[in-house]
Image (cartoon, rainbow, N blue to C red):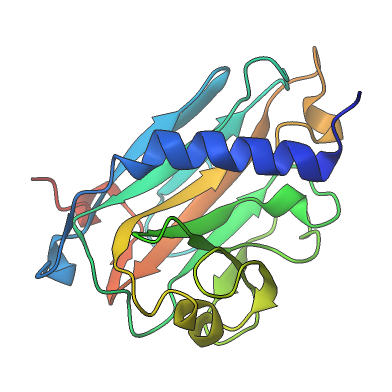
Length: 217
């Protein structure tokens, strides 16, 4: 039986949550100024600072490269946010992104995921295919959060406050950005990798856009 694209997204999401969930150091009293990032990647993938393109005055962004696609060894790459508070941000997180391929809703990536102690999560991700080789900003007050679990089950493209309300009795256990859409046409077996660039990650009042913004502990 073949697996649908939606099925692959669900499978990949589970793999990534397991891989990244244990990476985010958290604290009930975390100082937002102490937030830092680390990179993670799976098979046929990489994540690193890059000077290929940037959406601000500094030359840096984080390059996430995934693929070629292999259903037996799912490619994924991402950015784990370290030292985030167990209390979710009062203002919606956001980030800028650029891609070298576009299709539909981008397969739900790149997305910023916040995980909770109730086993659920909420994810900020594109709705429509972005234009290739151009920067796009996502976040803020728009209805662009998908919720999984908590008291609401699944919600599609909800407002940040509505998705957050689904986890009112839970605490934050992690936060990360991930790209896992290696099945794009440009990343079919033998074709090559799919590249995403991430810049101006904004979480709990902290903006990370270059290596010197990273508060290493």
